[in-house]
Image (tube, rainbow, N blue to C red):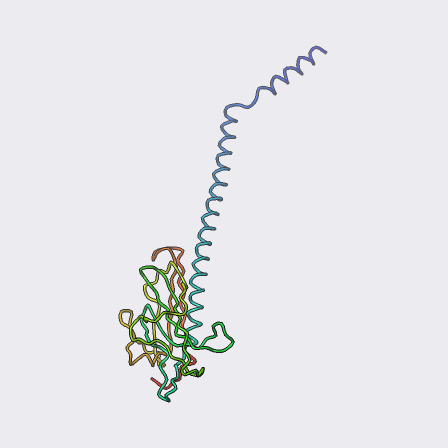
Amino acid sequence: MNVRIRQFFERLRREEAGITLAELIVAMSLSVLILTVAGSFLVSSQKAAKVAGAVSANTRVAATAMNEIGRNLRAATDNPVPTGDDSQFAFQYASATSVRFFAYVNLDSSLSQAVEVQVTLDPARKVITETKWTGTAVAGNSSYYAFPLATGPALSATPTSTRTLATSVTSTTLFTYSNGDDGVLGSPTAPVGQADLANIRKVGLSVAVGRSADDPNAVSLQNTASMPNIVMGAS
């Protein structure tokens, strides 16, 4: 009986001896390895989420601007005059960074009301703005509208509305123009000539949005807007 009791207490002493230094080192090494793998996975997931968020945000900004600009351009229309003379051509100014034109789009009315629209890219501020002037009915006749006119890039008349379509725009140009035969009108450094404004039949759009020109998360969208409402008389 005494032998069994001694064996029992010796077994208890052996079990209380704990772990060896080698076992401790192995356990710590495994813990560090597991924490390193888990940390790397967490960091990678956070980076991927950040990239996806930036790309998504840039895409929304570029797409919203593209859709609004295209919607207005497709409504571009020659502006008829009450004197019986030829209509005022839809496009009043057209350069690589700014375009101004007449359009018949619904504003806050159920009626189709003429507006003059100007969309401008400011490469220095990286902003695209949309400015509108509502037409004034001529002699109370809602069939004809008068607008402020100018051959240059800016109008002195107070606009009806101005709003920002996009920020963080990295594009240096926004528009290209072509005639009915796909011939190029104007250039990146020179606006479309007055004689060629009547011949614009397509407007190419290119919008890039990001923190900078070399931003890996920048998004670039391109589209072409045709002019279905412009009379195909000039060519």
